[in-house]
Amino acid sequence: MKNFDRLEALGQTHLLRFFPELHDAQKQKLIDQINSVDLSLLDELKAEKHAESAGELAPLGALEAPEIEQRKEEFESAGIRALQEKKIAAVLLGGGQGTRLGYAGPKGSYDIGVNRPFYIFEAQFQTMLKNCRKAGTFFHVFLMTSDKNDVETRAFLKKHAFFGYPEEMVHFFVQDMAPSCDFEGKLLLEDKDSLSLSPNGNGGWYRSLIRAGYGEMIQKEGIEWFNVFAVDNVLQQICDPVFIGATLLSGANCGAKVVRKNAPGEKVGALCLKGGKPDVVEYYEMGEELAAEKDETGQLKYRFGVILNYLFNAKKMNEIMNDKMPIHMAKKKIPHIDENGNFVKPEKENGIKFEYLATDTVRGMETCLPFEVVREKEFAPIKNPTGIDSVESARALLQQNGVEL
Ligand code: UTP
Image 1 (spheres, helix red, strand yellow):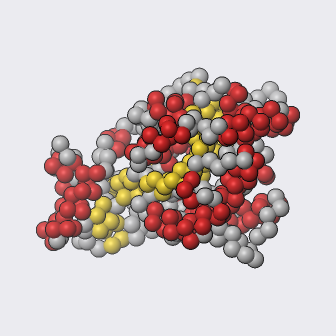
Image 2 (image 1 turned 90 degrees about the horizontal axis):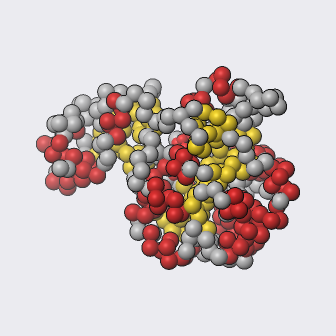
Image 3 (image 1 turned 180 degrees about the horizontal axis):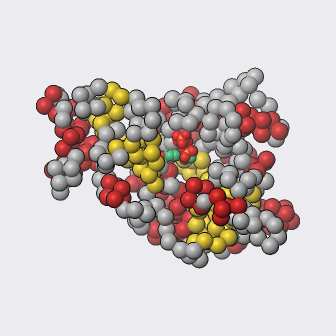
C-alpha cells in the first residue's frame, strides 16, 4: 500500500493540513512526494542504538607511508596496468549541500582562487587528468548530484568544458532524498505542497548509480573497482595508481586512504576492527578516553583516520547493495512551515535529518587495506569558510604544494 493511504496509521495526517487550499497540480506533487519517500526511516527513531554495529573495537594497522614509498614502483605499475585495462572508474560524491561552507551553489563550483579563479571541481578534474596522462588513457567518472544541485552542476561543468576532461567520460546520476522530521517523528513541510527533503547522505551512491541505469555499462566496460571520493578535498589523488596497485595486490575488497590523526580528538572517523571486521568509527562514537589510548610504542592506538577516498570492489558492491545500511540521524536546524503555514527559519536545532554514509560500506567489504598518505600532501578538505578544514587552510596547503592561486 502506498504511503499516502497509510498516513493515518503512520501518524502523519498533519501533512494534509493545507490540502484543501491546494490546486490539483500541487496536490499531486505532495501525494507523489509522500509516496516516494522511505518512511521506514521513522521506525529507526524508536530504536535506541540505531547506527552502531556490534562488536569489540580493536586497532587496525595500515600500510604505512615509508613502506609505500619503498614499494612505489611495484604498486604504481600494477595500478597503471589496471587503469589501462579500464578496470577502474571514479565516483565523485557531489550531492552534499555544503551547509557549513554557507555557499548556495554546488560545492565544486566554489572559487578558492586568490589572484585567478580556481574552482574546487577544477582541482579534482586536473588531478584526474594528471593520472590519466600517467596511464595514457581516460577513465570513466560517475558524478553524483542531488535534486538540489543537479542542474547547476551540469551547467557549471559544461560552461567550463569539464576543465579539459572528455565530456563523454563523465556520467551524472542523482541521489535519493530523505524526509526530515521534528523530535516527535512528525515529518516537516517545506511548503504547503512539499515535504522538507534533503539528500540522504553519500552512502546510497551505489544504489543510486545502479538505479540510474549504469549497471549494464559498468559490466560491458569491465569496470571492477570504484574510486569513491568527496568533492571537497582539493589535495587528494584520484585514481592514484600507487593506491590502486597496493589495494589490488593486497587481495582486499577495498582500500581506504588514511592519515595519521593529528590529535586524539580530530574530527575524522577512525579505521579499526569492530567484531573482527574493518569498520569506521566516527569521532563522536569513539569517546575521548578510547580515542586517547596509546599502545606500547607510545602512539595512539586508533591513529589512522579516513579521508573519504576509497577503492571499492564492484563485485562485492553488487553483493551487498541490498543489505540494510545503518542510518545516521543528525539534529539540525531545519527550515519549515508551521501549523499556520508561516515559514520558520529556526535558530536552534528543531529536527532530524537522516543520512547513509559511504564509510559504512567498509564493513560490508569485509577486508580492507588502510593506505597511509601524508596529510600535508593529500588532505585539504574544505568544510568551513575559515579556521579548521576551511577555504583558508586548504589555500595554504595548496600553495605549500606548489599550486599558484
Ligand atoms: P559532508 O558530509 O562534508 O557534507 O560531505 P557536505 O554537504 O559537503 O557539507 P555540510 O555537512 O552540509 O557542511 C562529504 C562528501 O559527501 C558528499 C559531499 O558532496 C562531499 O563530497 N555528499 C554528502 C553527498 O554526495 N551526498 C550527501 O547527501 C551528503
